[in-house]
Length: 124
Image (cartoon, rainbow, N blue to C red; front, side):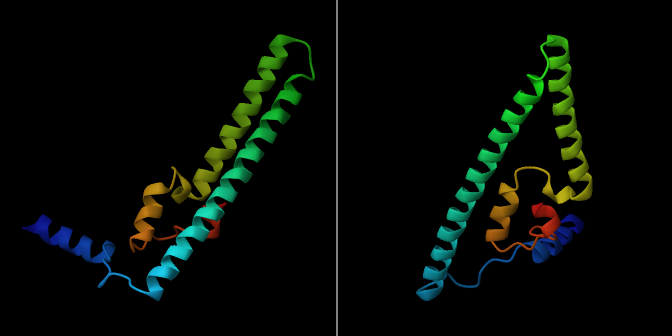
């Protein structure tokens, strides 16, 4: 019985089902918002893909500065280590940014309130 009460309390806090289905103008507004969000997401993905390709080119240029294969390997590993350390530092600053964010975004669209989900620090 106690776990049932706890689940009920959690359900009251996190589940916010809509009272009635959207119709008319509200449905059109929601569809336009989702289309705009899809366009912005694809633009963000294109920007991210271009940035990753540019960073990869910069790493290759950095590695090709020297002719020694051992130094090239050390440079490649060092640059990967710096990127990993930067990612780990960002996760310490904004732990909500860990993972892909897809389940959180789906929950947000369903009406679940997630603390600090769209904060500027998390979006960084």
